[in-house]
Image (tube, rainbow, N blue to C red):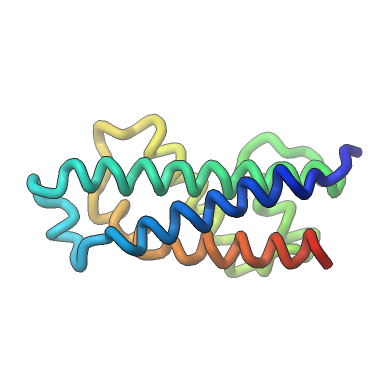
Length: 142
């Protein structure tokens, strides 16, 4: 079993916070405004920030799950579910984060067919990623 790398974990969790703060500061007031043609460059920025926040969250989850002996970890969803089983993350948050891992895949691979309303709702819910970062750091520094 590998040892927990707190510095690497902190870097990833800090990135989650930076990106979710930037999303909150720039998010349009409505899904209609977000989906408008005029907001194309803003959508690109926010989708990229969301992708980075999700990837950092999932990397942190996978690192902790593996260092805590959770096996098998074949998908990012497996890593989140392992944190729930280990009692590190509560079940409700875990469900939300497993769904978020699917959005990460859509942002990475289905970018030509993104549903702007779905992405907008995920951007509005990015505070859950912040909640995860806070919870995981509390666990790591206990």
